Image 1 (cartoon, rainbow, N blue to C red):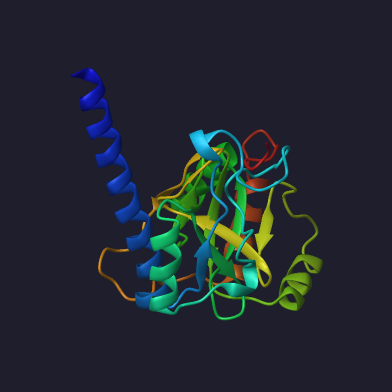
Image 2: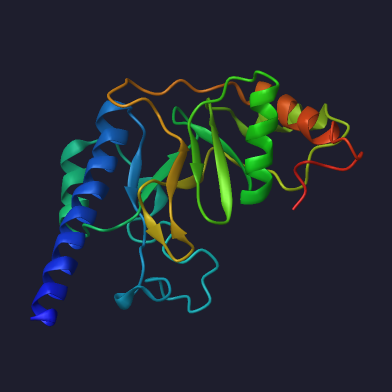
Length: 221
């Protein structure tokens, strides 16, 4: 009896996971016009990455087959991918006309959000994993990012930038690092979420970091 109940629970979980992943992919692609593709996912049993690299640094949380250039907003392609791989992570291809992101370690991310809220900075959606938080921003080019960073005397070394040619794993994906979730979710049923300008967010992060009471950095590891 316990074995039968266990099987039923696993089946319900699998069915729920399948619906959640497809629903998230379709929302991104068809409602928000964000190009997505399925991530490589985890190996059988959920241990390690499904890619050939036994020492993969981001297990389950990267494109593999198809590659990043296959990202699309086409509904039929999205449905076909997730019909064949129903629990695959949802990967956003950043840059071009799609959102970009600024990420930082999870502890620093929590501090940053609290500091930016106290400063009255308007933020867009924020994606959280157990290890890193990512603040979504409006699309920007690498040239613009280079000019922006060059103009700064100092930028926290904990920041990473996801723009053209990059990717970001989106909720509610499950990876080897844990579940991906929205720390700040887009409004339900809304059109494409509003995204702040990268310069405004970088300026605010630099100010928040350098204004720590003890003279240190709020955004340190």
